Image (cartoon, rainbow, N blue to C red; front, side, top):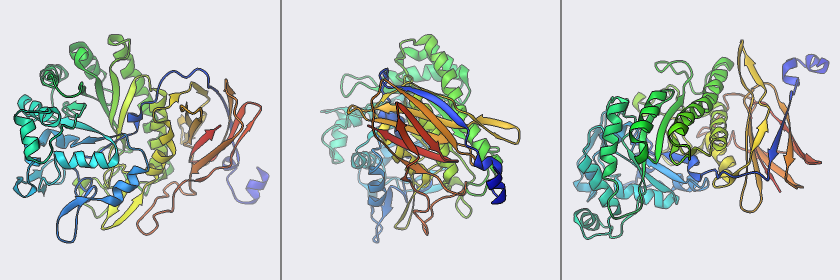
Length: 505
């Protein structure tokens, strides 16, 4: 401490409180479903148009190979499309057939911009094929009809002959796509129709009935779930329609401040950092309480809790269209992502799908793209560090979380999760939310004989560190040598404001 004072370094920055825990490596039972690491592409801003889908010098639309190549490194399991709020405005027949004959659409919900519908069903299926990901279709309940959604299901899945299969063939696709994951509306309590839970539950059963014809794959039907802590919405769905629901889609964003004034993505105080960490931790309470309600009606946990939209939501980037929701992405966002993924992993018995909002240029994006330039965000790097958890077996892990206090407010300091893959490799991911103080974490490894540990770390001197087109690699993972194995104990010197991923063999 004296040396720290002599050097002008705050005493609290010199301390490294010790935390203890244990991993039971021989007791893993639950699979961390790869779909927890899913993504979301809405017709919003420059996520699709100007992100995944760009024009060449002649004005012809094409896939953005730079974006696809970057995302392919993450083993993306799924993509949710076409929304979001836009889903309940979207009529799929406008997005099939020759592109030059498709009617345009005004995206009244996001920026009032007119699009040419050149990106539709066939183009989306081409995208997920290039990403080696599974499609999640969200059907239009708010402004659509049962017939419209049933026909879309038939268009995607019937092998023919039949009117929709014949139409698909006319548009250049003979074979069905066999799309299994299907959302019945989006945020039906809000932008998807402002419905009551009782009304939506009945409507859901009606729409879902027609997603079970005698062809195609067995459907995985996803109900529009609650907003945040609306526990009665979940209870009503389980009571009224639970037997027909495969997944309930919970949405929750981490917002600092208010919805009207969310604050800057890059210019923030430690108080706003702390508020973001508190907000991220809140997803654990939400999952726990919604799961408890679901357990009352579904003790066998056959119905999944899906976190279909999550991430940080800031004020739009200055100089951009407000309705495009374009924002930067800093180390703060990376810590929020790490907390969410650790929490999802630890709830893998009930949480079996999640979708970060969104993928390119919008909200907590993985990549930013503009006119041939691409930046991988800090959140991208977290997904890269955590991807080994996909389809691995969750290992029971007890760990003291410690406390990160600021101005009289407290939040847990450390988050972690662990898994083992089919080759016996143990992965441990940790996050220290405290921007000033490191933590020494000692973990007892039970039922495990390991001899080596290696890892990576994502951290920076500044809380607001981020990547730009001018400096695209300012913040990226580096080799981590702060972990040691000795006598069955893993000791980690976990830096302040850091995400760490470890591999034990």
